[in-house]
Image (cartoon, rainbow, N blue to C red):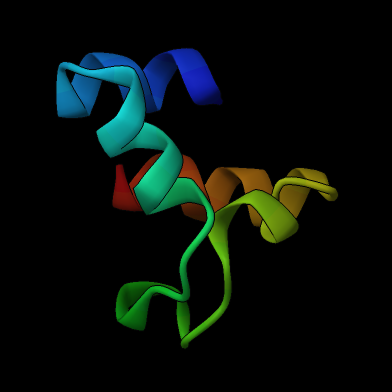
Length: 48
């Protein structure tokens, strides 16, 4: 997932920032925490 985020944000710091902060598009949840489950990871990929 982190590789996809780096591709989207075009830099590692931006990707890390996005992955580690709550996200309104994900119901206020933190993307990296959602990646613990397959369903959560799918939600994160969809938003990315």
